[in-house]
Amino acid sequence: MRRQLAVVFTIVFIDLVGFGIVLPLMPAFAASYGISPLEIGVLITSFSVLQLVVSPLWGALSDRIGRRPVLLIGLAGSTASYVLFAFAGGFWTLLASRVIAGSMGATVGVAQAYVADITPPERRAQSMGILGAGFALGFILGPAIGGVLYTHGHSAAGFVAAALCGTNALAALLWLPETPRHLSHRSSQRVPIRPLAAPLTATVLLMSAFAVIHVSLPIMAQEELKLSTQRIGILFAFSGVISAIVQGGLVGRIAPRVGEARLALVGAVLMAIGLALMPGSAHISHLYLAIGFLAMGSAASNPAILAAVSRMTAASLQGSALGLMQTGQNLGRIVGPLVAGALYGAVGHAAPFFAGAGLALAGAAATLFIPAPSRTTDAAPA
Figure: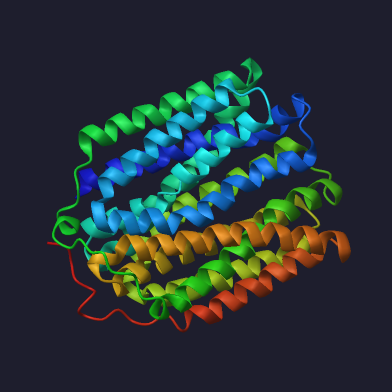
């Protein structure tokens, strides 16, 4: 199991590195070709929209044909999207690369289902946390590499991302077997929605709360604290480091003692505290404290909710259920920035953060309704 978990962690980490290399370069690269701000927005949004739509489809497909082939298809498609980005010279080619990247990279739920298949129930929060740490580390390293590569042109960034993702696909082909549990539990049934209503609601609310900082934090940091773009980047990197530490080391120790639902509740409250503290940050040290609370809360709540969903879902429907959770996260990544942008312009810099805190508290309330796993679905893998 450890070897398989290590391979899935590496797949997720390298995939997110490749994603992180390309995404921050998109606005500057697009602008250099005379692409309008509206078209740049379409390019960035298209990725999230495809992720929103395709995630549950990949999850359901993995329940029918297996985790391994879906992950391999996703990795191969992501490699193709980066190659297309490297050769792009206009809006439509860039849009095609982002559409392919969004649809083929929407296999996160499948990776989580793979982990659920190979992990005993009592250790799923730990395994989901480790997987989440891979995401956090990939988001930290990817933009740093992309910033260096962009000095050599966007093609270099695209080719490096493609090489990383292609190597990832080859490693998965060689070293990632199908999960024994899935082989014995294939299903064509649909996942029941009612038991997942509470964790799905919590996921949408908490991701929306977190995503308000993608718009509000950079603007506030520049206008109120006069921070440079580089120092703002360090703030986000700090958030990623905290998230990796909590998910990779602490969640697995705490979840078995307090339970997934309670850990998600505590995490949501920490998120609300962090967001509420941000508007009062008169010094950068205060901002780091607020971001620390937010990052710790998000890092605790997300894997806890995923583990709870995994434990309450039948073995044959893990991909569908966790793919649905990814849809919730992607919806939050769309809603949060929209709310933040609207409130920042209409009310002021503090409004998005307080709104985010309110969303986090609503998410905390939703975690109270996450049902306990039943013995029929909460079974360790064979």
